[in-house]
View 1: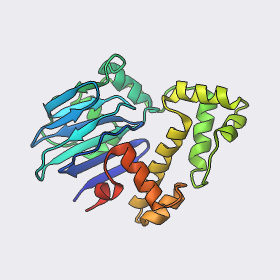
View 2: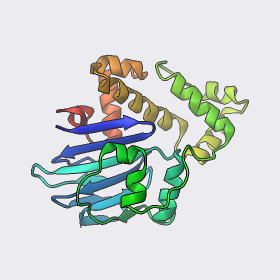
View 3: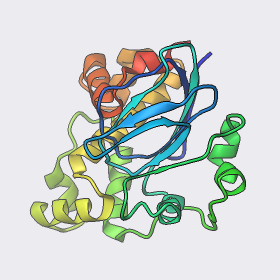
View 4: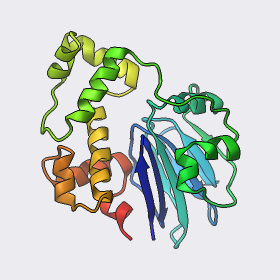
Length: 238
């Protein structure tokens, strides 16, 4: 059975026989293989026959796994988590976009990932804080506003800018400077997470898509595929 967990800005996914299209997403990503290595391809590099890698947020890449029934672990961390800034510093991901990692003897339990003990005990990353990074309080307020209004069909940049008393152009610049991606892209990221939460509750694709503010399930599936290089049905199949 495919193992998928999503909570508090962390997603944990084990899948088999995976090959993604080239894609870009907002998360910091870890990938691990045990039985077989994998390849990671980007415009800048090709990492061949590796068993572990960490990938900088918003870095376009393609994952190519073994074409046999082999499991791979994918961990996604929201960049706003304070632990992520420490992980990026540990792997020097300011000057490079990927870092190869040693293989694991076994995949960690999801709980060990969610409480970050996997990162400190197994990967030996000196994580000492919790919470989210110290971003501008106005942008924090906008993020809260976005996440509380995802079911709405439209969340305009103008409305968000007015909520913190900035012009739309100044707000758009500040948001991208603080978060790393344009506000529209961030809203899509939040919608995807919300739709996945609804799916994991047992709701169907249409209801989950509407709860997250997508026009329909096709819109959700298309957006998910663009961000992750695979369809949501392939991730959630049993």
